[in-house]
Length: 75
Image 1 (cartoon, rainbow, N blue to C red):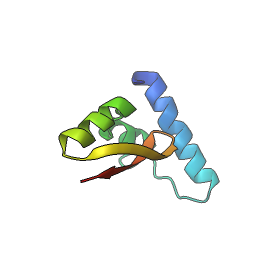
Image 2: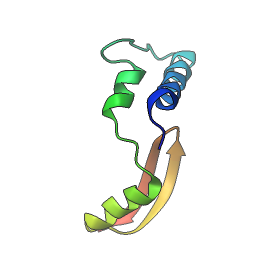
Image 3: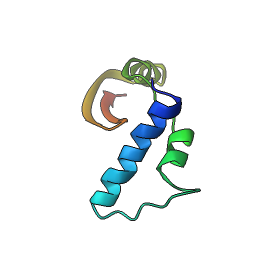
């Protein structure tokens, strides 16, 4: 997964996308780069491993945008 300058670029793009779509983007303490430093970005395979370890079965990706993914899984 990206780190350092590449990761900052991802979150700068996220902030620019949000601002272009009317979202008031706060810079500084709550800005996109702060989110990037606090939000772990895991490989999809690792997310699936976590879902299975939590007792879910048959995880299926149903949404992916930017670094966010949504999964459907069964308990």
